[in-house]
Image 1: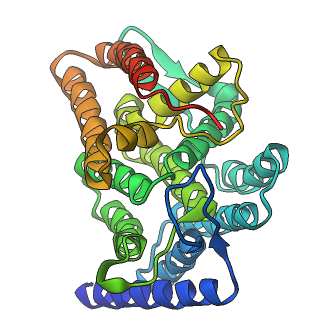
Image 2: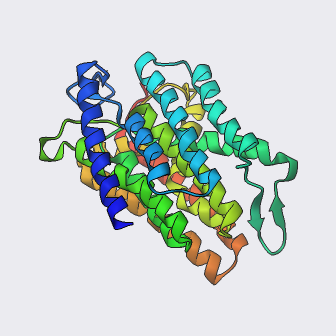
Length: 336
């Protein structure tokens, strides 16, 4: 297994390097504008490259579970949707319709639908006939919540690290831990390109990467909930920062009568970066916040009961939202 890991790591590096060079050659680059902090055109093909690497992992590591295989396979197609969006700037309807195709495929043909929201002692939240609609809406929310975090170098990657670390802690299944490592290794190598370490060509995840990571993590959570006996509320706590931020941004925009589909500088990473002028501190604070929220949920679940954990999930969102509104007013960042 160590040999396979080493080969996979080297392959990930070389494919990222080659694809980055190709991207610059064919002008597949993100052009700076007043909403973006980078100063030079930058390759945006990190996500599609990661999806190709994940396809190789299916055969290299002999992932036996068919559902896990198809999470990665379908992830390749959703990364293509993101790549098309990066190049042609799709309208929101086209983008959502194209996202629906791989989602519906996993739900209907691979039976990857969440069946229950968990047992809370006093009641059990079985989804029944509503499971397909709920899975569809929840996966779309999380995929686009991940897209919200892709605004400054490292923000989405480090936030995803916090989720993967939490899941690694929660599960004991070694095959599933290997699956998480498969996701983590190329993503870690991507950071060297994202920050141009050792003068490597700079690379962004692009929409192909944000949609890919949101898609993979969304359906990995569904898989874990259905097969590994982890309570869904604990899985919800693992992605707290994504859920809270997505709901907060859209709530604030709607209350301000702003278009929720227009990109802006009102995201958490923009606000923190504006305040501290540090990529490192911004990314660290977001990671720590997600881990702290999970710790609250985990301790309340184990020391008290699941329903307390559920109620705290709602209460913490209200607190997060109120603090976030105050932060936004202080920084005075305007939507574009």
